[in-house]
Image (cartoon, rainbow, N blue to C red; front, top):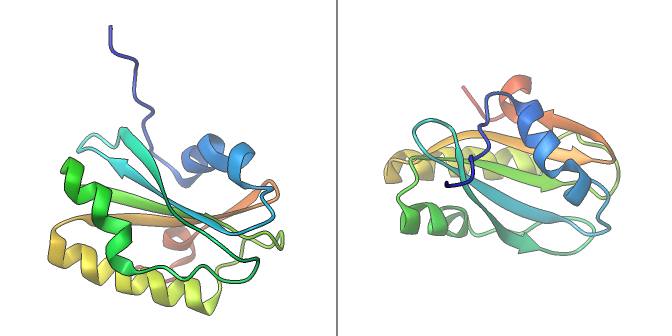
Length: 131
C-alpha cells in the first residue's frame, strides 16, 4: 500500500507541512514542493541554504527537480529568520522571474510561501508577483 501523498489545497497546508521544520531556522532556506496534477506533493527539495539576509537563487535551480520528475507545478517556500513573513522586494522580483521561467518550461508556479516564527504569508494571496 503506497503511502498517501499530502495534498496542497491552501497556503495553510504548506505552512502546516513545513513551519515546524523551517519557521525557526536561523539562516534562510529555500525549498521547492513538486506537485502532480492532483496537487499531491511528489517531493520537497532544498534549493538554497544561506546567510541570514538574502537567498541568492539561480532561477534554473528552482525547476531542476521538477523537470527531472516531470512535475507540472511547484510551490516555492522559504523562511525569514527575522521573524517577519512579509515578502521582500527581492523575494517578489525572484518570484516574478520564476513565474516567467515556469511559463517557458510549462511548469506552473502555484505560490511562494514565506514562513517565519509560526506565521506565514502567501505571495499569491497578497497579490505579490502573481497577476
